[in-house]
Length: 266
Length: 175
Image (cartoon, chains in turn red, purple):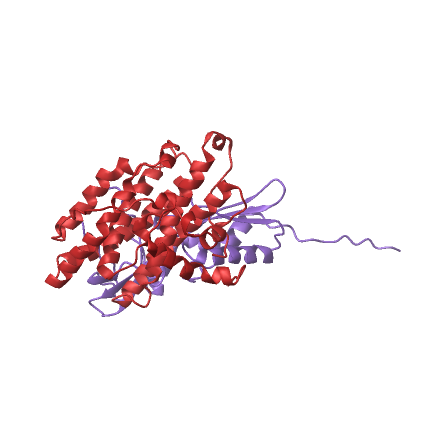
């Protein structure tokens, strides 16, 4: 992450009335989601079932990393403490990350990764569609760009869930097992938050697009001859810095180079 | 007898010339295309204090070529004698393949890459699952082609195979 960040931000007078702390937290939460998922997807490179999937998952990770750079740069700028995207990505510890549990859990098999991709990219499609009308110019500009990228991600995951779910008995069972494993992490996406409530017109309330998300995902699950799981537990706490053990294992891999060689550039 | 010699400096390039220079910079990943062909050079202005203000937009937010493109534009304009230069990258309005020039599309075909079709509707618009329009093979022109992967050698391309001439090819994704 050595090149200049992409940003449309302008400090303007409208910003005075906005809850800066909430906006910083909002950008950080969205940025951490895509940063951590980009890191997870990168783990598939050289390990995917086909070389085309190495490339596809690498490409999707790259899109997410681009979104993360914009969001984390913006969060750093709003925070005003002189931290840039690299400081936020590589020098924070586990409790300071604000991502959902969904993106940090281990990849599992390919079906687990595709179940997560379906759920997350369908969420991102709705999120960025809603942020198109955000009154925050940086968030709406990013949304205009990213909504077209995540549309491809959602298509990709949809194709795989259909193919595996409506495939052989083995692929069907593993796709169903993957959905069962992932589903406890769904509810957290739609939790209400003080941050979103403090940013009317700026943040997108996930509860407002839950119906659209459900319609899309359930349609795919139905077409794939799969069953929507009914989990007995649910994750919570990612947005306030409480994480599963998986994030603690991911961070050293992601941060080691930067921490071992401060200021290193390509 | 004294001879007065006035230093003759070349006239500074006009804004039209600067646009032409910046627009002629080749894309680092698909060098047959210029930035003008791609439609990612959004604006070149000369501000009141003489600074040349260049606005670029990325094809994808994570496109690694973005920084290289900005550096290439800077190199080209510096070579043309520009001292005060500001190269900015903005996300809005979001780049779309609809901004690619006809000339650019023709060059892509000659280069062996299927050009993008018309842009698809936005993500939120409902549409049937699994519909994929076929890309025309840039080598033999057949539309009897098959998508191998939605993601290709760069973020902006997908991977296809021609069932008529059996050659693989890249297709520029419509976004």
